[in-house]
Length: 255
Ligand code: PEP
Image (cartoon, rainbow, N blue to C red; front, top):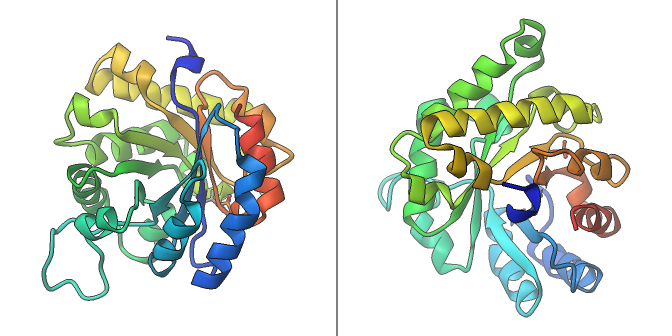
């Protein structure tokens, strides 16, 4: 299948940035800049407290709103957590799961990532599943083993039909927030390997239909080259998603 048949998705990951009032102002500034750019989906994944403001400001625009995590339980004694049902009732359409900052700082494991993926899907959310190797793993030559393991465990119990609502974000940990981008060739190589893992678990056609993003210091300058690669269908953007002009350039590069 040719790449143009897959959905291109450019998603911002705001991390712990922006207040609700800043959120509304940012989306009002961004919306006219990305209006009519229909060659890719435009998503902003925002902190929980910004969701209401984001959904309101994005009404009538081509910007969709996502969250940065979801808990695996429907409800219960999980202080500080948010369920898929809560997100979807608030108008959230996407959720990031397994971001390396969650794995690194908050004890997220392959198993909890799998639980969260299933919770997102069963609540009708599109899941942006993050996988990626650390610098040590790359230096040890186990990049493939790492992303293959993360992908396989995260997708345990996910049907081929549900896979249609999964986007995989290849995010080398050493490239996130560091200004060190993977070269287009490095990113393409691993994205192609991840597509191979999907083909092994599901089928060739399932793999060909899966959107795979690159994330890790993607910016206005390097986006076009990264997005021109055969297996890179979009981007998960941290720092550059906080600047409307830079984010717009990346959205345009994905057209
Ligand atoms: C991210 O947080 O997913 C990310 C890719 O961050 P940055 O673009 O800032 O490296």
